[in-house]
Image 1 (cartoon, rainbow, N blue to C red):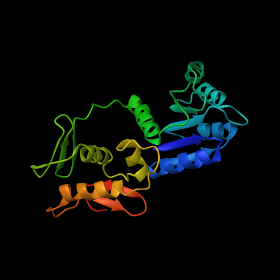
Image 2: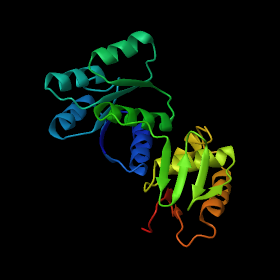
Image 3: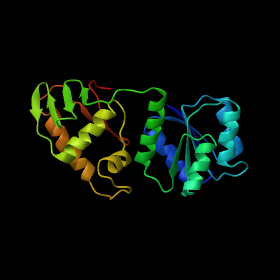
Image 4: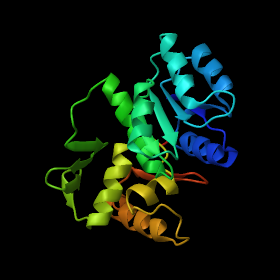
Length: 226
C-alpha cells in the first residue's frame, strides 16, 4: 500500500513513517501543508495521513484543496485537537477518519485497514488457514494436519494475529500493542518466550516450519520458505 504522511513534528513523523514501513507499506512524507498537497495531487496514494496543524497550509485546507481537485484519496487526520467540534471540522473538510494524539500505532493500522475495506468490502472471516494450519475463530480451536493443538488464550491471540498477517513481517511493536495491549516496550523477553512456546506447538514434529523469525525485523508465519 502506498501512503502519504504529512506531519511537521519530525520525531513524530519519523516514528510514524518507520512503523508504516515496518508494516510493509511504501511511504512518502512531507513536513508542511504545501509540499503535502503537491505530493497528494501529483502521485496516486491509497491513503493519506495528515496532521491538522501544519506550517504554510493547515491540514483542513490541504484536504479541502484535494477534494476541489477531485482527489478521492482516503484521508486520516491526526491531531492533538480532540474536541468534538475539531473532529467535525476535519470530517466536513473532506477527511474520512480522525485520530487524536497520542494514539496507539496498532489502532492507526486498524483504521487504515478500515478505510481500505470501505473501498472494497469483504466478508468477515471466521476461519484462518496457512498451509495445513487452521484456526477457527468461532470455536477458538486450532489444528494442524487435522490434529488438535492446545493453545492458551494468549497463544491463541498471538497465533490469530500472525495468521491475519500471514506472509507479512509482524514487528515487536505490533505484537506488543495488539496482543499484549502495551503502548510501550517493557524491555522483557515476553514475546520471545511466547513465540518459542507457540513454535513448539505448531511446528514440532512437522517437516515444514510455519513460524519464522525475521532477524532484525520481527516474525512471520508462512506456508513456504522465503
